Image 1 (cartoon, rainbow, N blue to C red):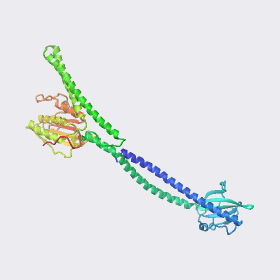
Image 2 (tube, rainbow, N blue to C red; image 1 turned 135 degrees about the horizontal axis):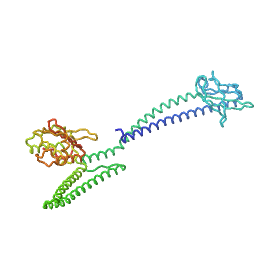
Image 3 (cartoon, rainbow, N blue to C red; image 1 turned 45 degrees about the horizontal axis):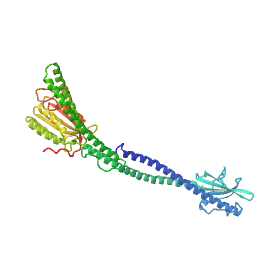
Image 4 (tube, rainbow, N blue to C red; image 1 turned 90 degrees about the vertical axis):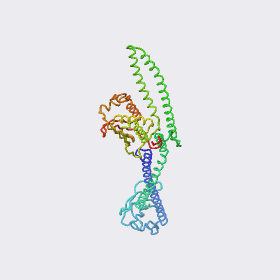
Amino acid sequence: MRKGSIAASLFWLSAGWLIVALVTTGFLLTDLYSRALDRSLSETLNFHIESLAGALLETGDPQSQAIALTDPRFGRPRSGWYWVIRDVDGTLYNLSPSVVGIEMPDITGPASPTGRASTVMDDAFGTSLRVIERTVTLGPRSYEIAVTGNLSEILELVGDFRGQAFIVLGAVGVMLAMMSFIVARFAMRPIARLSAAIESVREGDSAAVTGSYPREIAPLAEEVNELLRSNTQIIERARSQVGNLAHGLKTPIAVLRNEAAATQGALASVVRAESDKMSTIVGSYLERARLTARTAVVGKKTNAVAIITRLIRVMGKIHPEVSVTLQPVDPALPWFRGDESDLEEIAGNLLDNACKWSTGQVEVRLEAERGEVGSNLVIRIDDNGAGLSEQDAHKVLRRGVRLDEKTPGSGLGLDIVKELVDVYGGTLTLQRSALGGLLVELRLPTARQGGGPPAAG
């Protein structure tokens, strides 16, 4: 997944939440398990205290050998399982065989409502103990019964459980992360399909966004189609208005020019001059409007190789004295994203100029290059003519400018080419050619291969 994508954001967000949730779950389960084991230990110790208290009350003698517990852990030294019976003054009366080399503490502090007190201590061997103590009254005397259980064993069990729990939760986390990745990718598939459908419209493979989409993004597809329909309607209205404006202005301008031509004098001369300017300005802006409307339609693309090949064949007939050659072209060369007639007008004007000013040799190359936004179709036209200076190269792109009045032409060809190139967002540069003449470099937007005009035969 690409950085910054929705799928990646969903994956990392869910993965981060899973880590926090699973770590929290691991500590929570460990705490619950530890509490359960400690509670079970306390219940076991309470049971042993009740057994010892019952035996003491039954025998009436705190030193009786009949007072004992059947749990074998109380007979093993250093087991952590001990019991003692003593009076309130601390005098020891009875103890388990496991009490060797340790001193049972006297638990201070208030007892629980059941008459028991509990604490945690370490024996002489470093074993952590849970201690529970109860006072039993026998006649005029009171005795304290203290029983301990091995708390270190529980802590080891808790540690083992914690390690196993985190291993299991880690495996669950990996599986959930994989599931999250799959779900994110699956959830993004409709958006990817919508993106591909819009790209298909932009590339000219389809006239509208097609396909069925989930309820969340279906309105977006409908809005895109509505925008395309609206754009087409606006362009059609613009074309109609441009035509109406042309017809509406041409007649009054023609009347003014005819009336001025039939009249002599200073006023007539001014009217003729200004009407000529008006005609030129109107023609210029109408041409711009026509070009903009024509190139604003989404979805057109053209096989540039077929168009250039056809134009080269035409130039061979118009200028038989000039050798026009097309260098080998990469079969995977992308197409021009635009109208066929526009590419013919652009390339035709440039080739015609190259043939006019060359001394017999013109070379054409078609390439693709990666630009800042996307790929560009590069058309390079070299001739072996006289070439242009840097100052003339800037001047010749102005409307109506001609550097040689002897060569036939109106001077509008390069200006129209520049207008079309600007409308498509391309670039046109004039440089010194390796052949000695002029190198024209034209960069235009590209589209995927497919559709478009048939290849030239």
